[in-house]
Image 1 (cartoon, rainbow, N blue to C red):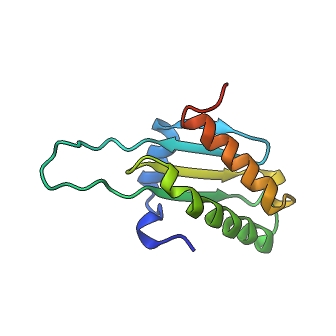
Image 2 (tube, rainbow, N blue to C red; image 1 turned 180 degrees about the vertical axis):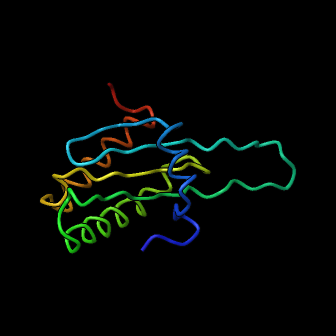
Length: 123
């Protein structure tokens, strides 16, 4: 389970990540990342936590399949939160093929997308 402080809930936050962030597409998912814009010189202000949200449409499958995909993605993102800059907003959108994919395939696509967004991969 993703901790409460790391969950993206508000519509405005989703919109900010999607519209103003960078995007990396893979065959099973699309990852939107809006890096944290915090002021390190602000007195007494700690860096906000990285927050993640998920979009799994009906095109992925029936409700059971969609929930399974969301659970897998939450688990994968939870393990990768430390790699992301503090204060970042991450939106992971599952594509229709994600319903048929296993855990390892989702992990591979998520890692490749995050690596590209964080500057480690070529376009």
